[in-house]
Every structure is written in C-alpha cells, then in structure tokens.
Length: 409
Image 1 (cartoon, rainbow, N blue to C red):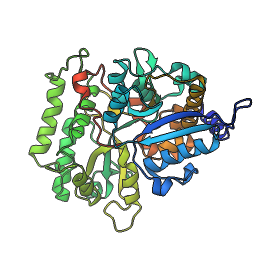
Image 2: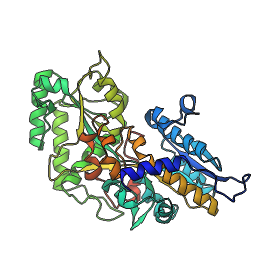
Image 3: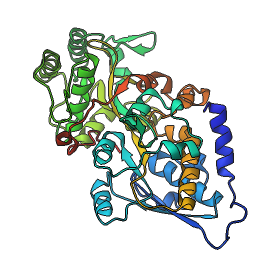
C-alpha cells in the first residue's frame, strides 16, 4: 500500500456506513483494550485526529472517529494502566479476553508460543493491509515462525538526543550538525573534550530503577557486532568478547564522570531539559517533549536540539528496538465481529501517519518515505531506525518476565 493508497483508504475507512441488508438494531460489538493513558477529559469526544496531540490524544481521537463513522458497530474501549499485561493475563485465564489489544512486539512471542494469540494473516488480507508495506523493523517485530501475529503500529528505540548549544561550546558541531563518534575510542575522546569545555558530563543517563537504559545500550552494540545473544530459546550468551567491549566502554564513561550518575528517569529528563549534559540516551517517545522545549524561549534547549539513532561504534549500524502492535487474543468471534475488526484494522493502518506524530517511527514504509513524514521535525534524521532496528530473538521466557525493556509507553 503506497502513501496515496493509504490516504485513499483513510477516506474510505472514515466514511464507512452500515452495510445494506443488516438488521439496524443488531450492531456487531468489538472490545478494544489499550494502554497509552487516559485523557477523556481532553479528547473524550474528539473525532478530528489532526487536532489531537500525544499518544493518548491521538489514539483516543482515532477510535472516536472510527466509532463515529461506523454507527453500525459498537466499539467498547478499555484503557489499562501501562503496560496492562497482568490484566490481560487475568482476562485470558477467565476466558474473556479483548478482541483487539495493544501489545509490545517484544512480548508477542510469550503469548504466541503459548497459543494465546490468533495469527492475523487472513484478517489483514481481508482488511487489505499488506505485510509487504511494513517497514523492515515492524515486520520483524510481528512475524513469528513465518506468520503475522499483529498489526504493527510503530517502532520505538533508543536515540541520541543532543544539546547542540553545549556541543558548540565543545567544538563538536560541523555545518550546523553535531559531530557524532564513529568508534568507541572517538566517543571517549569527544566525551573528555566535552567535559573539559563545558564542565558537564557528555552523557545523561537514567541508571536508577531503569534497567531499560542498560539493555538498550548493551543490546544495540551487541547487535552491531553480530554477537549471538540467544543461542536458543532457553539460554543467553553474554560472556563474549563483544559484550566485554561494550561493558568496558560504559565502565570507563562512568569511572571518568563522563555521564550523570544516580539519576532515575524523571531526574535524567530534568537534567537534559535544564542543560546539564550533552546527550540523553532515551527513546523515540521523548522527541515531542524535547522538540517543544527547543521552541520555548528561555529554556536550555531553545534552538539547541537535534536527535539521531545511536552512532555506530563497532561493526555496522544497528539499533535494539521494540514497537507497539495491535494483536488478537484467541477467542470465539462471530463473522460480523471479524468483519468489524477487519474494518478497524484497515482504518488504523490508514492512519499510521497520524500516529507517527507521537515521535515513534511509522510501521509502514510508504509513510516513512512520504513527504508528509519527512516534513515533521527531525524525522529525516531518525528514519534509519525503521531499517536498522532489530530485536534479538529467539527471546527466552526467562527474559520475557522483564519485558518490555523500554521505559517509555
């Protein structure tokens, strides 16, 4: 599905009317469960997706619009506290799971391997959604043993969020862009130069009660070196030369005070926003808030913000990523409910560009390549994440208990 086709589908999906010959009093009911927060006070009646902002606002307006344009359907939505898996497990155990639910792609294997999710190849065909249009990272995220187990919604991953004003003080700007390291040795050289020039640490990191920080850094650079992390579904292999290189680098950074220390996630966010470090290693979900800061006079990031995927330090470009998807727990559904779900999936796919305004990478390659996406702030710079993103697999169940390994939504 190219971008023009996606736009056409959006118009068609938005204008769907009750099917002829159906009993007007019998509406097919579908039960959608999601995270991304509760914002009914702001967006509970909003159906103009373009007017919505943020994850909660955009997804709320999308579902509102679909329900308003499809009066022959009853769309019930339940918002769960992030990430919602304890509630989903209880619903599955009770034999009454939702029809459609948000799930991190890294978690799909845990449910799929237990036979708790429906393969979605057939219903995606009915929805006229082609897996060939998924980005490389998105398709990897929802494909298990050759079958598709979700409509991918985005790709999320770690990014290099840069304070360009501090980089300029350190002489690390060239042609208006930050100079990023191309090796571990160069990163240390840049970090030492930065600290000498600014008196501040090169890196801002959330290291307290946030294992996601270490996992993103560690897995990203293991993947770049093609290190075999999981030799099989029940074992992990970390005593390798590739792993020792990564650990040695971050130990040196910490030992020399080239990073913030003893900060949890809110403290690290505040440090970066207040200009207390050069690079914040955090995810796609912070692009919007930091961009807003960069447009606010008087703030430390005003006119001084750039963002890129993690730089290549070893091997090839790679990024440890996750993503959100819409999955279908196994349950009995009527043909009318399945048709309704196909219509909803088609609608959500057609509005993937709207979702990309959150800062997450689109799940559809035509959207990534579109002029509309490129016109959004910084999107050209982070677009490679949709191509270089990987999730290590197979993921053993012993590790899945700690997922999702991203501290954002």
